[in-house]
Length: 126
Image 1 (cartoon, rainbow, N blue to C red):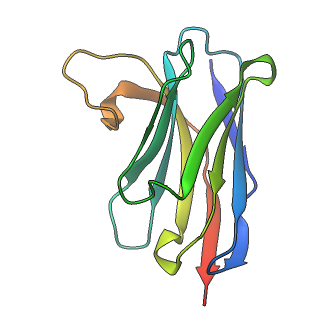
Image 2: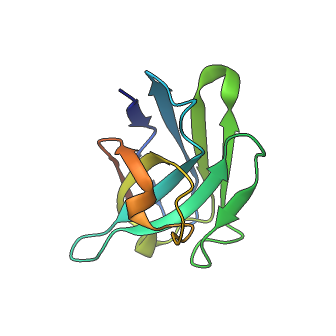
């Protein structure tokens, strides 16, 4: 059983930065990649970033490209989301998830992610 625990959320002013962490346990060597998603009030959950465990290849959603970076420390079983130049529209609950390559699934197809963290709130104010 994989457990994912996010941390690092909080409140920040627009233009500021935050770094989210996702610590994985009970692992996860069965997982091919880790992703970050977010869900704002009244909106659907959307993919933000993904990193493939073995290769380190990353994919960043257009909405955050140039501002967010995903990285991993495999020795610590931890994935990070570095968020810079934050905007009010980045306000959301951020989730990390672990997934496996699935035929027909896109980068952020949620059916490819079988383990999810509990989420951490990020609030960006003016």
